[in-house]
Amino acid sequence: MRTLIRRVLLDTRYTLVSFPTAVIGFVLMIAGFAAGLGTVVVWVGVPLLAGTLMVARGFADAERGWLSDVLRRPPVRPRYKPAPPGAGRFRRLVNPMTSGQSWLDLLHGILILPFAILSFVVTVVFWLVPLAALTWPIYGVITSRLEGNQELPELLGLGDGYVVNAVFYVSLGLVLTVLMPFMIRGAALLRAGLGRALLTGVAELQERIDDLAQGRAAAVSAEANALRKLERDIHDGPQQRLVSLAMELSRAQRQLARDPEAAQATLKSAITATRETLDELRALSRGIAPPILSDRGLAPALAALAGRCTVPVDLDVQTVERYQAAIENAIYFVCAETLTNVAKHSRATVCTIQLVRVGDILMLTIGDDGVGGAHVAKGHGLAGLSDRLRAVDGELTVQSPDGGPTMIVAEVPCG
Image (cartoon, rainbow, N blue to C red):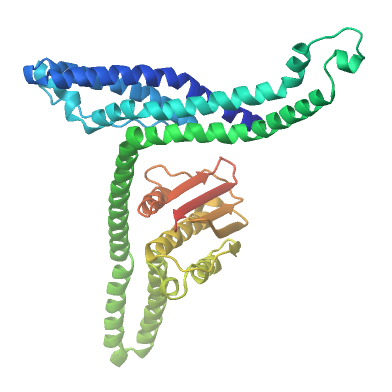
């Protein structure tokens, strides 16, 4: 209830307080634009138009501040094109005219007036009419004519007509009071919708483009780092073991004729080295999507990861759908890397994994009862996972205070 009242008051403040601002802005922008356009041929209109655009920017900034409260979104301010370095006085003067957002600010200041009038009227009506209807029984008595020598009900004007009117007006007031939050909210959103489209739409689109560019860059970086790490691990591990194994087999071949027992010992050592190399290759292959993931999906792949983990894992997979390969790979690698960290560093006794789809979001939650201290700072394994998730518009959240427990949540859009 408190939240509803606060919402109504915020919307009311927006529609009432911003109404005179819209009227003043409309007058200034129409006058400035008309005067500037009419005198632009004699160059007097150039500074007038530039000044009008700067005034429009000021009113637009005020509107953006109100929009953050009404739309319950962080304030978004577009990037206005700055004047080039070393630009002259005239170039700096006309710089606002070179920015498309400046003209959108001006267009908003002109078009907003009918929306502001409508939202203002709706707000005033749905505050005053319910208040007047609910208080009608009070001023109905006050305004009744008192006649001498009448019975008390008639003296106070409390006849049948009064009762019927009182019931009608109070009922009407209650109905309008119930409707008031929705009507005022609708009026505020009607006006705010125009502001969002003209004043923040371009900025939000630019932020989205920037996020996608950063996501692609992060994906390329993460993939390059993973390939370099895999190459280094193969060079330092299995490749060296295979070279040593080839040398051992050559020595065993030479020993077969003159010293069979030594050859047998050498072959035994070579077999041990082969097994160790296979184990190391299996460990490295965990950084590459396994066939079980592409063939059968996330649920069996996560079950395989859980089965290999040295810490007991409680797995709860609530979705069996197939998703895009990039999404499944991202979720799989997050789980694989996290389980590796749990086994190596957490000193946990139990780990929980839950995969669930909530609307258009695929959510992977991994928790353990270990010592905590995990974070996504650069230089740690989780930083690479965060970059990998950004490539698919995902987000990684880590809660791991010192002493534990640890909770890691990966959210990926899958709609």
